[in-house]
Length: 512
Image (tube, rainbow, N blue to C red; front, side, top):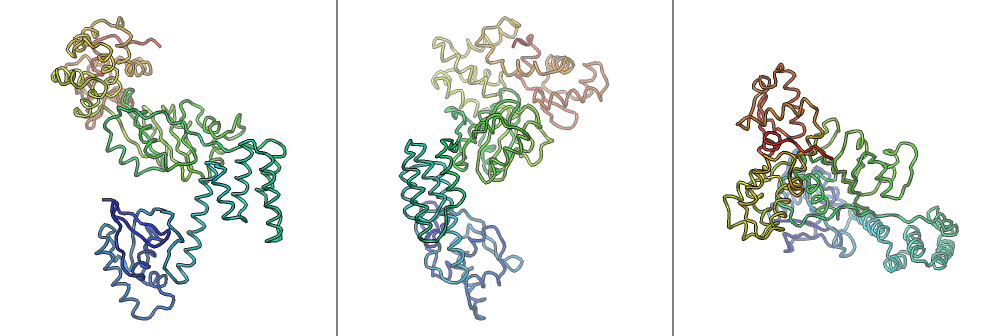
């Protein structure tokens, strides 16, 4: 069940979609004080000082009574007295209902009412800055005529719409009003926008929306997604072998959280990451320290940044900024990067692989040959990209059975490089991986793939390779780093079936 609260208007709470009766005013005041300090432990004396301006000795008993009733009404809050105080952790929403903390009196709540009202006003103006909607800005300026920031935004929006004369007229209106009401001249923000309009060089803010489309057949990864949603807006990294669906997972997470990052979503692939981030927010040909310039541009904003196929740690070092999120994908886990929560992608579970296959191929064809389907999916170690390619291939061949596909896959392992182009698409992830191996790594992997069993220990590998254990262990760890073999326990490794098939039964396709 979902429990959420609002302080914008009367103090309110909902369990799912049902509103909860929070009791009398003083009890709601205790709850409000706790919610205003979400996640912070408040002592009994602090709580009493917030709720009562002139507390009497009976306030201690009253506080205990109110916290007891709150516990009964809202057991999910886990409100308990610990170390002489109370803490709550809750989800707060702004339902835009009215004056904050409506109905609560006292010095503390009056101060908080002003703070929340300013917070709401700033949030509204942040939204207006992103949208630059002329009508909404006109309404906001009319309701807050002495606030200069929305005036400047309205002038920018009018200028963007080709209404330069109206934009300049608003400046003169603001100047006259500020002089008449406060005896002041317009501040630097208004003057700057006015001068830029006169020169014709007003640069309008960009809100990049670069996320690739979410895959309609995306399947699985529920645990990884749930953990990532908890970590963001920190930095998360997604690692796994080529073809394991790292990019698809990053994009799915991005679409799930993009509403949290209203200043824009940026997708980057390549080595010059900082330069691409700056280009996304309108900075062309930057000079100097590009990472520092990006941090300056991103300060105080909420961006979602996805960097796909990170080549090395240096290309993304020092790019994270407070309030923004960074999602990295990389074959190798970049352990030298600090404060990154890493997730590993591999094959789907067997049931998820079947579910994905049914999404890309007529489920009736899948159901007609369950044993052959199981063999085909196991053949590619349940990796999503090869499954998608195989399902598409069968869809394009309506007269083929899954058994025909399986027999062709078996035949292709004996054909070496002479395989059809659509079959190479299945093997593309391993083709790419093979090109990035050293000669020694490639030779060792082929030796391991020729073995009948799918597991090997360091001593067995050293005997196969004809080198000492220390040397071979380094090679095995290097192969494990790119997920072509998987470490089981110290000194023991698993070789996935798809890898064994590719490197053991056929000559790798090393064309570009």
